[in-house]
Every structure is written in C-alpha cells, then in structure tokens.
Image 1 (cartoon, helix red, strand yellow):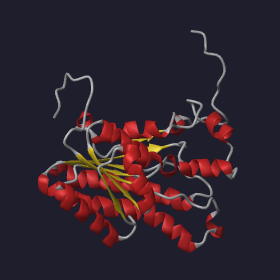
Image 2 (image 1 turned 60 degrees about the vertical axis):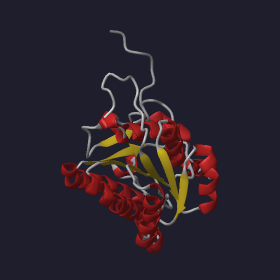
Image 3 (image 1 turned 180 degrees about the vertical axis):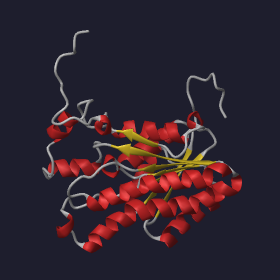
Length: 269
C-alpha cells in the first residue's frame, strides 16, 4: 500500500482491464488509469474502435469479444493472462441502452439482449477475472450500475433490471470474495455526456433541461467524473471499501421532493 501521508495515489505496476473501453465512460477510465500508472487493457466488441482507442487512451493492449458470451470472455481473459501475466483491476463498463418502451411493447429478444450485455456480461467478466485474483489473494473490481438501477424509470425495464442486478451481484461478490482479499464495488452514474446519451439527445428522446432541473448540481455529468470515482474505488485509497454502491449523480438519488430542485437565492441565516 502507498504511504498514507501521500497527497495522491497511483496505480503503478497494476494491470487494469476496462470493458467497453473503446468509448464513453470506459475510454475515459482507460485514459485516467493509464495516467495513474496502470497498464491498461481495453476490451470491446468493436475491434476497430478498440484499436483506435489504444493511442487515445494510452492503453497497452486491446482484446475483442462479446461480454455476454462466456467463451468470448474466457478467451479475452486468457489472452490477457498470456500476454501480461495478471489482472489486478477490473472496470466493468461495457453496456448497451434499451428502447425506451413500456414493458408490454418490448420485444423479448431485445429485452434479453440488454439484460445479457449489462448484467450477464458483468457477471461473466467478474467470474473469469476473479479466479486468479482469488488465488493471488488481491484484486479490485468496480462495476457500473446506474441511477436507473436504484429506482423505477418507466420505459426502461430491461436496463433497470440489469443495473439493479449489477448492484446485487456487486454486494454478493464483495461478501464472498472479501475474506480472500478481493474488493468489489460499483458506481451508479446519472445522465452522463456519453455517445449513448448524445444519441438520445439528437433523437430528442428526452429534454436535457428537464434532467438539469431535477438534478441538485444542475447539469449532466462529464465522463471524466465517472472515471475519477471508479479510479478511487479501484485504488488502495479505498482499501476498506467493498460492497459499496456510489451514486455519481449530482444529487439525483438524494432528491426526494416533488417537482424541480429549487434553484432560488440562498436562504438567509
């Protein structure tokens, strides 16, 4: 562990696997983990995008595969072990959005694919990468849930079920693996300026002003803000944190009143 008096932390000597690392929050995390000294591996289903992301993020290696497919995940993890020897850190960022439809209008196959990528994919990567961590007696994993996993969002049942499942999986793994030196946590992002959200904005699926009015900090999140939260939980600075769900949401999940957040003048005291 690093000197407790140090004003900063680093990840020197660690190998970090970032799934969904070719874009969005995954790419931001890959870049930050590299800057903090980790040897980063990007895993993504899009081989061309993953290759391009190597230079952008400073990652050392990319592997290609579908996180929802068990054989694909095992192959990617085996390749990392063969080429780099170990995996110390995992950031499970791979995910896809849903169709914003009520339950009775959703196609079962599409519903299942959203659950498979977001939940089954997180499970499979944790399972494959965690084995060697358990044998070694050390490791840290951060999964990506969502504010959609913390409460019901109409039209988002597949994504919500998957992200709620990620929270339960995180807590279960933390309890099972903590005695053997492996920490597992997750972040729950709010609306973040990712390619997925930008696509929704371009298609006018939702009004960003509505989200901003509902958020105490009054804005959408930046990808880098999610990356910083993940880096903290992955690092030794979070050495006594496991099974935690960290909302990175500008106060969204804390706000419980009716209507928009009051943006009026400060109260005189």
